[in-house]
Amino acid sequence: MARKPAKRQPGQAEPALTKPPAPQRGVRRAQVDVNFENQSLLGALFGQFDANLVQIENRLGVFISARGNAIHIEGPEDSVARARDVLNEMYDRLAMGQDLDAGAIESLIAMSNEPTLDGIMDGKPEGPPIMIRTRRKTIVPRSAMQATYMRSLVRDDIIFALGPAGTGKTYLAVAQAVAQLINGSVQRLILSRPAVEAGEKLGFLPGDMKDKVDPYLRPLYDALYDCMPPEQVERRLASGEIEIAPIAFMRGRTLADAFVILDEAQNTTREQMKMFLTRFGQNSRMVVCGDPRQVDIPGGDGMSGLADAVAKLEGVEGFGTIRFTAADVVRHPIVGRIVEAYEGPSA
Image 1 (tube, rainbow, N blue to C red):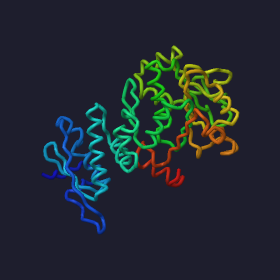
Image 2 (cartoon, rainbow, N blue to C red):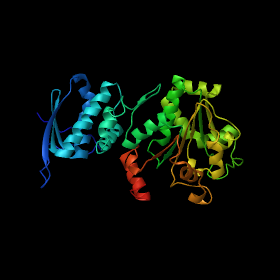
Image 3 (cartoon, helix red, strand yellow):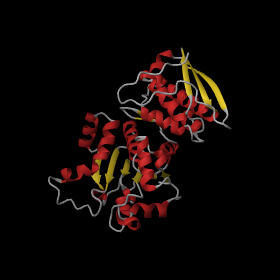
Image 4 (tube, helix red, strand yellow):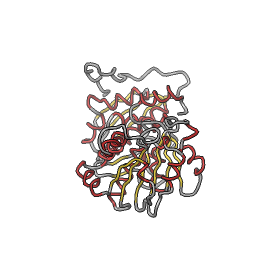
């Protein structure tokens, strides 16, 4: 029996297709049935008022009907296959105790168009599924490039993560750092970024040094609190296990047994970048995140330490370079469209 259209709430989007869309000339059509064993998961799988199924129908142009624990999908052949894979992955995530929201489903839909979909969802080419476990959540990739990045985070000594805002560059690096700190792989977590766009001139700001630099480091705090209970973050900050500081504070140090992250690296000078990279010590991992198209220091792109470092070090053993584009934006679909509008589809 086909699903009845969900009753719309004020301001809610139009309901999903209630009958199969009209066939398009030259498009092969298909039908497939998917069965799910654990009926207790079906409520979360379908979503309130079948909102999750509505989202898949509207995005992929398919018709979905449900009877008991079986789902029938009808539509263009490629879209039916994608819808089937998305539903199977949604079910698997729920079975593992992970949460589903509209953003996660949107990301699965986007990944279903990638040639490496099976590798991301099933983990077959690389062994177990790709994930990062922290105290507060289990994080899985939301795009094909995120899957590549997460592999690099456990393989390479120094990683350059390049791309627009919203692609998960810093967040995934912080999550991996927290996971390694918790399991004892590293002894310290050091997070840094340029305190201001040019020269780190903080004297005009009120308060002590912490008051001056904290606003610039807030995104790093936010990622930490999302991966660890607040009391643990505060305790580890007080003990020095976690350190958050502007890049100028890295001078003269050797960062051993540490997971080190530099955010907004496009706003470092060449001298700052060289200084930072040469802090690398034994049993450490370093992640350098930045958007090459958002350089704010005087002189623009030509003076960016990030661009200079990537040009010199890409391909050198021990270095990994991950390039995200607007297609990898996972905050909200409209953010990707904003990036494309400002920077073009190759952003």
